Length: 302
Image 1 (cartoon, one colour):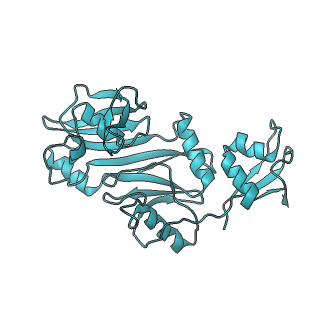
Image 2 (image 1 turned 30 degrees about the vertical axis):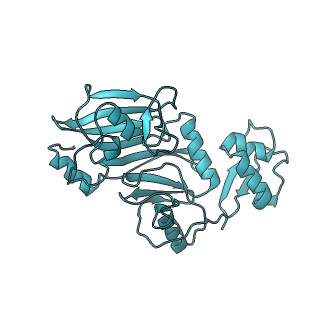
Image 3 (image 1 turned 135 degrees about the horizontal axis):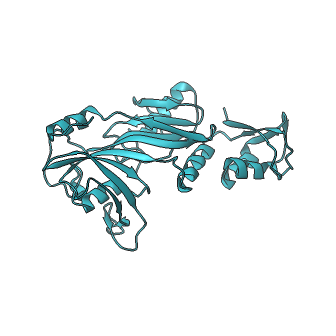
């Protein structure tokens, strides 16, 4: 079934139905074109053109065209935090790739989400509102339509508190201050490399950190992202001399057996919900392997 959005046009608006969707509910121009081409728009129960003039009190329903993914649906268990008509929020486990790549075309979170949707009767494309590395665990949001994805992303880009991301990391060493902001631009080390580095003239990258606990050898961080660069937390913690445990790419020299993966967890995420048009926050508990690592490092978390 196509996804529908219903609204009542309030006083203070003057223009076409298409302009109403764009100006009042943040529909993208691309989504509006898709409604025109393959979807439908109704006003007071009757089909209307997007270019038709809207009237105050009109009850409109926009039907988005049905979409199908190019990827395979697979029966892979996922930990669902929340789901409704517009979003799916998952507690991602460490070790699973988010999106299929040339080298990993199956067994990804995308395949797992499609398998879940197939079992529940929903048909759609998987659009991630945030991304996590293979070894990073925690909260990840999937939009169930083009409009939902655009709405969430725009709220984040416009500087709203919607889009706030909080992480927990266990790292080597200890910074000079218990609280700080790392404002250091990040770019690829080379055009072909997956590794990122802090370098002048690159894209703005800002991470706020707070020490939750520390000793001579390890620090437990809470971090908030104000930008969303690839490997941002990993690069910034390494930049201040505190590489994340088990992150050999960014300077963790010694193996730490209690945590044999990147000791980074996305603990909470706030998004702007496209239908409620309000912020919603979700959280995921620190997984057992990281709790064991924190304990083995001689630290605790309240």
